Image (cartoon, one colour):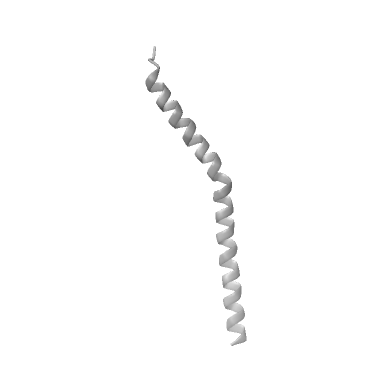
Length: 53
């Protein structure tokens, strides 16, 4: 029983570590992605207002 509990704990620990890694990566990349999306949206909106050559 003790070995089964230890294995379950190690599995939970490994899974939690992966979740924190993914969340940390997403939190680091989200501002950059949102900034690029905002820049593209503003560019699209202003390009519709300014007539082309």
